[in-house]
Figure 1 (cartoon, rainbow, N blue to C red):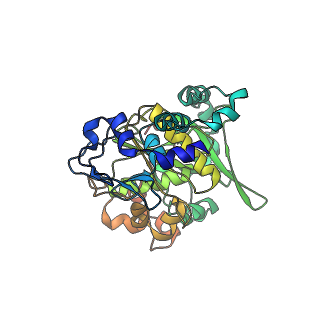
Figure 2 (cartoon, helix red, strand yellow; figure 1 turned 60 degrees about the vertical axis):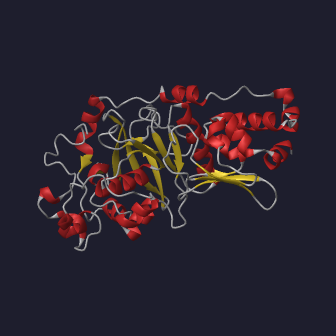
Figure 3 (cartoon, rainbow, N blue to C red; figure 1 turned 60 degrees about the horizontal axis):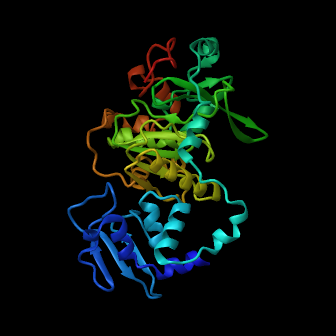
Length: 375
């Protein structure tokens, strides 16, 4: 219970001063106030971080702006990049509390987790697909038609036409290419129906479970890491349509690992609100800071479902609001006249599929070389 006592009794202004410098808390009174965010990488011209004592006598903090961070002294230490174990030890040391938790675990204290080394070990098994293996599969890949069950499933998710998803028909099943941060194919993911339930599997076994990376990866100033490849594709559709400043990685599962390339910038994380999703959020946040992230932003879980559900039911604008997207930095390449065709078809899907190839957003004209074209 000592951690609870430490949180309740911690002098948060003193803790901030110790970690961020005495000048950072100038202007705070006996009951708190509002100061400029003193955390590394969060410099600002106007004060936006409030510090106060709540009705129970516990010091609290909150960063102004939607989902910009808030909580107790413990969560403030977490926001500085400390792991939960490090934050616990630092808070107990600062308040002079004795750790009953450490006494209980003293017999078999596990070694501190090196999450960056753990990620590197896992990612060592992730390898790109050999060109000869893709060439051997080429004859089995067919372009999706609007009448295919796979196309109807993509339409329900707001992802028809598939565009940068690079989806194909593989023996009647939906399949899509998984590219890495270097643009190379790292696997082909296949959605199969078994007993009325969908199940995803890699077409090329033995190459581990790579994350889906958006085209032209590495050019944006922020990285969005999402649970699920199709959710990542939904986010990428919004990003390209709205002209937002993000790269995207889609993890195939909550226990899998993102590529480390490009994590040394501002990182946004989205996962479902279940226990596995919350575990993924904590793990990826710790990894992001270990990999050099300047800031980590947690996108709240959606009550309406996942990204695909929002995109499919409410469209690009609704999912853009979920991402808290700011004003576009540049205009999307898609012309407004094509928006209804590409994202929310007003015409039957079969009619859209019969249109000229130039209208099929993202679909290359030379299918003999696709999906080997690097993007």
